[in-house]
Length: 212
Image (cartoon, rainbow, N blue to C red; front, side, top):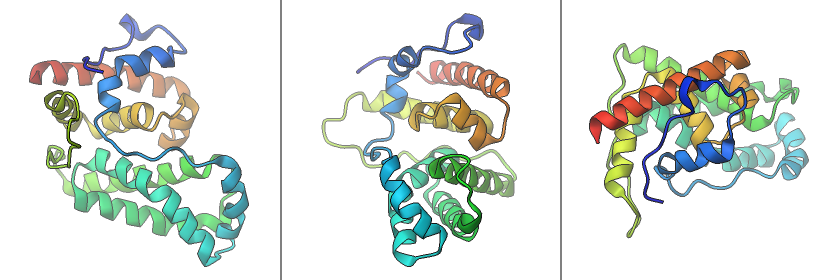
């Protein structure tokens, strides 16, 4: 779909935005990263997650294989550099493996892992001590991919956002997390998540329009 993303309704007065409308308006944003695998099947996770919590090697390998693609993509979108994304992802898995025996299942394993990864990414950003570099534009693009120039403009606009705004947009529009899941990942109350998302959309629109 060849269209520019639109911001939410004026003033952001809706408590529960229409997700179908949001996804239509942000279709270009969602097309920026390609090849993301489908979400893990929850029933299957119930089978092997207890074994992973017990430290069984086969289950830990299964845990890693299922979560690695999404976790790397999340870290890359937040950090914009391959080496930093790899560092954040590996640190997140190390922390998760150590903490798995105490994982109580209050949230989905993916949500729990995302929170660890976001914290690791923010630690790297603070360690940089400066604004993050623009996201690398040398990612391979499939032959015939539509609106390549526009997709690069979306990446550039995302790269200019603050880490907090980039994180909330990534979790909402790339990872399709619900508001309560985003609140869990970021450790924020629901009203704060909604306000941050509105401000992030407004900031994205400004940067996108300035670069288009």
